[in-house]
View 1 (cartoon, rainbow, N blue to C red):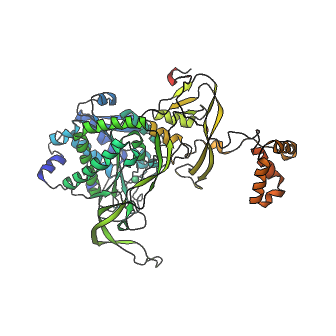
View 2: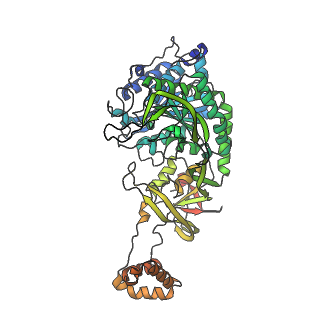
View 3: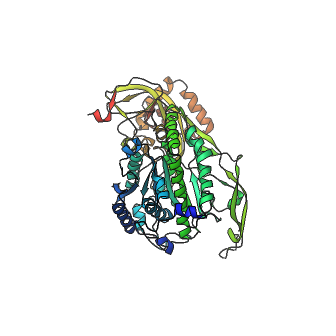
Length: 590
Ligand SMILES: [Zn+2]
């Protein structure tokens, strides 16, 4: 790390007299293996006394997920630490093990924090640092010199997919991996105030070793969102400018075009880490190192940012706590939720951008122009940064959702996310609002192991529905409200419906045989007001219907009481108003 002043050397650097030393293999363009990494953390925990390596649940590779906790007061209970008004910072590494800068930086950070350097350990006065050394253990074990085609070192690294080839940075809502289930447990046990996940990215060339995704502030309750946007984020940038030799800019979100034409803020939806963690009012960031910078620079720039983030959190511990409490209260009172945003391409900020001139020489393969960057021609100029978004889908929160107990996959995930649910103590018919799925699109190839739905259109119908003892009532009034809305409103981009947890409703189960149905069909046609007109209108749209007996019968069948009401009906009901319901807590339910 190259630091500008002597004072900062004292602040940032490892104390040479310290007892805790860890390997610095990144200086030789290498990264530790999984076992070397866990050994290093085990030794740190054993020698320091102020740290603990805790094993949580399993990962798909069979190994437990580790959490390394650094606590100045040797207190390791999250409950006690929160009571003691400590801020909790959670750092997640190696979600993509081919991007290990954060793995190395976190280990150095841990060693520095545990050394007896007063300036550094001051950071721990009001802050507890929790590090997941390696989230994607399976990917880390799948090590090769060929896992990253364009990356400048390390010589060998892990692979993006986990033991089941799942991209864990799309799995925060579905939690189909044991890795994600164990992360969810850690997240809700520790309830971090601040979250950081470390990555490395390509897409374009520029001068920055480090780029930063700051969670979309408009998705947070106003007090916390405004604070992040107008105070914390700008201050982190200015701290980096003062204290680090490495440049940092917003994540350069472009693909196959040069960034000087302008680029937009990366908007994370809940399947991504920061999109998920911010649903619970955790202030969230992703570092995205630049793939073309030397590995040691990527490690050191990430380490510098970690120091800035911790120093800031420690210095502003009281304010962050107050704002998060305020945000939770705002969330409880919030009635309308934006579940999808779209970019406002008419608005942008101008940012000073340090890039390289783009050139388009002919490809040696095809002779066609190919985008290159000329590193002999660096520039600094103002570039349009599109970071304004408008609501695309806003939904009013009901007072409760009701989920029939049969839909276990969604109920399980709500429980993992500590959503407080009650259970009906008796069978009852409720007159409530139910969604029908009018339209949806489905990927024609698997996406992270799922045939994900998108562009979901619904209509809401009020109707009586039979529910049974044991069905789940989900009150929409706590600080989990935003999470509940994002997963239970079917149109949301990462709803449980979108992720195939309700696909059974998309197929009808009953049908009719035309040769016995005709007489009944004619009777239905004669006695159902408006049905004849409906068929006539359909014939006007498609004349072949006039001579198609089966299709005419199908229209009649679908408009008759014989047609199943549950076809295309999303089974989770919306209870719009507060009401007395016969319910008890899950723990008391027999
Ligand atoms: Zn990544």
